[in-house]
Length: 111
Image 1 (cartoon, rainbow, N blue to C red):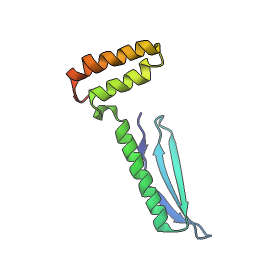
Image 2: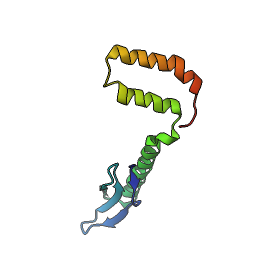
Image 3: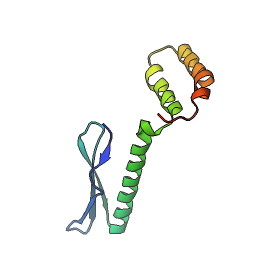
Image 4: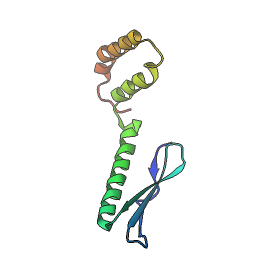
């Protein structure tokens, strides 16, 4: 499951004059989480929340394997799944083989 925003945030003012903001999202396990912000000025708070939402959306887009080229997905698979499983020399051989014999033929094809 991938992360997703549930809203772009809510802003309100507390009785002491501070501004509070709250953004809700679902994490990769489907559990609803929240990120809170505070500031003395409403504009500053809005800027913080806008930056957070923008960063969140960029991270979700970057983590989407279906948008990456096949070469990048294969490199990621090699790093994540094979590196911890085999000895260093074997991993280096796999990496070298992929770099010289597989990647030139697949180019930047989408997944």
